[in-house]
Image (cartoon, rainbow, N blue to C red; front, side, top):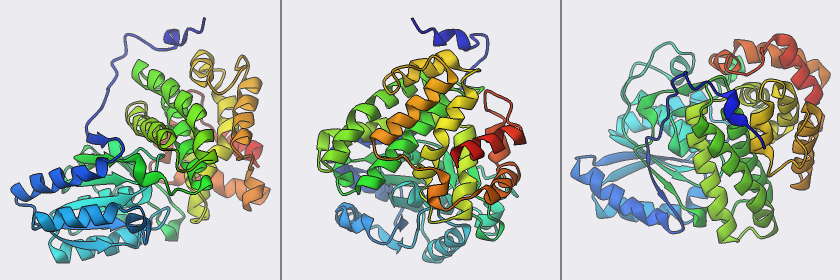
Length: 397
């Protein structure tokens, strides 16, 4: 019988967070009408809508949102240029647009990128003299933001349920993460019907992102029973339903449970926080902005599991049990995770994505110099030395 409970200190006070009101389920997009009514009654008559170029329309989400805004006499301006791995330049451009329009709230429609960019804009609307770079280089500490409504189009990031946001500062190859209470979305919509059009690779990568969130959140130095038990459920659901969604992208039940898994994974890492995999992936997609965040996490995960196993053997055995038949050693746990990744057609290594041994030193440097990433590394259950980080990158090549 696995006894992960013994690896937690019952005399250590844990902070357990659930803040956003989430409307979850097929058809939940209709709840935007109720949200728009609430905002109209509060005097919020102008909003900025943050999105990518097409998914917000092709999913059908925009038709419902636009109708709700018009019915409640809420004017809007749409910033539709958010890209994967959003940049501080785009955040500045969107904030300027929103400020000149007089937006009093932010509605995001998309995956983690529009959500994170929207959270950033929500802060800058309250701090007109600041910029995306000053925000992500921690040159000020925001305590307020305009309200955020997050309409989620992917089952991966969990950003709709937590206080985190990420952006890239292109000129410095930095991809920091921020975490502030003022950017919890007030309302979130998780409607699996909006996710039926995700491509097979998007489906894989966003779900693997959710798995990484919980493997890390269950094994940080601040992990709680809440983050551990949520982690086990997330992995169980992803292992069961990801192959079904790959086989039939229109499988609504599979999307429903993958969406739920991603949502609670967002809550899980809001509480347990993150460590190696995210700290080491951010330099990858900072150097290659078109590189998929979820793919980078997938590539790093086996080596991370191997690294942390000695410190969290029971916890890893417990949460990985639905995925890994034999997680009794660091090697078998790591190999089992890689075998599962191969089973969902993600056998990739860093060399497959254009990284080489020559990149490792730069990646290690960025892991330790990018603002915020040292904080993640400090939460790892093993000592995050430069040699340890270098070994993870090298094993992942």
